[in-house]
Length: 169
Image (spheres, helix red, strand yellow):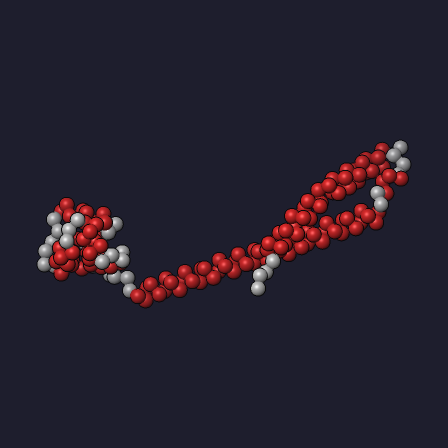
């Protein structure tokens, strides 16, 4: 049982007998004898084996360890491939959404600029003796002042973002 477990765990870790022997400071033939059941490691060596194989001593001494089969590895590989495809699809979808949001932002900025140009700052001709008109005029002027200064920077950033997120074929 010990011999089979050492061999199965060593193989599952992807180690050759030589590699395990080097890590344990023994010769390869010693590992071979353990795995064939011709000899048994002492207690100190058993602890070293468990540390190198990252397996509890009880597992080494316990029940048979089943080697991972090629079919299991293929199933895991297939699942990982599906996960990778899903992540790639999610990334592509997020990039596409960002692309269209940036285009929408550019359109909104252009529309607001067009509206402001068409209105030609109408608040300049208003009668500011009425308090409500004065507040509305100041608010409109503040919006226009801020928009005219900030929107070009946002527009440039959005255009750069569109360029960077466009679909490359």
